[in-house]
Length: 455
Image (tube, rainbow, N blue to C red; front, side):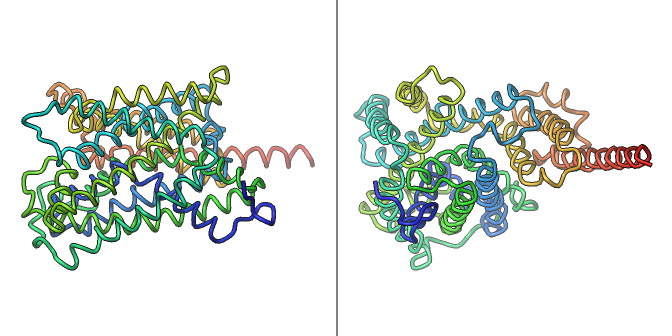
């Protein structure tokens, strides 16, 4: 393996390849389908919605990478102020969600719906059997690459991602040259609060959760290329995160524009995959379907590889008695099973879960970044996360189609942002302020006591 000539440094080419790898790890199924659907629903308010989407879909993941870099890349090191068993439990939940239970199976489901379904004769074929066969091949490839986590920069960053970027460039430029139509009026949720709705839509990419996973993948690759010093690892993690963030921002803006100008093509679409398929067929005829199939399959495959690698490495740290090989294999098999659930059902089922867990991930990232400035970090972390977790669960329950939930959640109606699924924001701010004041008072009292005893 070729290491940099100087220890703890990367060449410009290697840094770019690492940034491309990180970009490709993030650019998966949700990153392709949700911006397009949000853009179509937002219509003339698409750019306001896109701004909100960029906050949770790009800004937050970048902060997550920075936070993970500062603590060394391991999730269990993210918060030293929580009980070890609790942080491990949170980690298990997040890694299962971003891994075999939802995000990774979604990569195969989206690849099949966008890349394979348009070429099938659905009336005279067994689509379930074909989807199973596709997922077996898809995850066999992901399994193979995941067995070599230290070589992702070469396989993903230097080979797959440049091809992906070229195809995305073709897709993104097309609506500016030949727009399908004009943006229509925004749908109800986007009329008055397009930015907030875009902010919430950004949850669906799961990139903030992915950032908490990919830190260990990025650091593993940096170490395998001769970067081992703590400062150097932090520096290069942040640099690769910035490269990935720039790439993701450009992709999201292009996809929002596609969605906003494609309502006339797919007015009744139920997900972004259907909109994308209709759009590329309009722009490029059957060649467009092949281009889109290649884009989505490459994007989803790289994300699947990164997620399987991260989950296996995390569980190997938790349970060393299980080998990395056996964990990768078990996770891949679970992904095959989950990938054969209907895509719309899979998305709908996990919306409440994401509303519950995403605020916890955001606060974990925030606390990791500001810990050194908190006068009582342990008190702030524990109390704030408790309140945010409870409010997040309430936000998740709020979207369930059960009338009884409205009664049980009635006391929370007075919280600002409750109707927008942001009931956790005010409690989090209040908790951080109050616990910081308590910390200041206790520190000041202790200092005076020590001063008096010294006189």
